[in-house]
Image 1: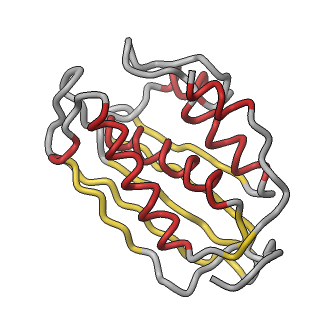
Image 2 (image 1 turned 30 degrees about the vertical axis):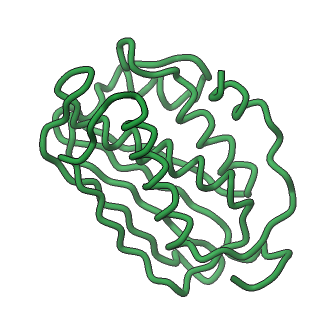
Length: 181
């Protein structure tokens, strides 16, 4: 229900410059807490964040945190060995300015990866469709894509079954309509 509610809520046009490192740290914490609240123990999967503190795009913080949290949660879940356990793994989150007016956020794992058939379906971002048998609602990536598009950005997925997944989020930098972070 919470995922459906999040998906249908409009993304406000108001933006404020936020330190991307703080936004990503909050999203990682949210993803880990979500898994723990579901009785899963994500501690075997480390999440390494490599983001410089000076990057500060103009965002609706809640919506970008939710987008990144959904992607990070999926990356952690790529190491699942069952409904509760995870094998040891590492998720890398990095960001760089792609040019003078965009930032690229890359979330990469070397987990289970996605089959070509499932990847084709996932890239449609249809809410409620999931490839996670009994573990997902199918709203995480559609929420992420919707929130990022509402910021004038984009989200893309590259994956190879058995090798891992890389999700790239691109956000414009110049949407600041508020105070400095």
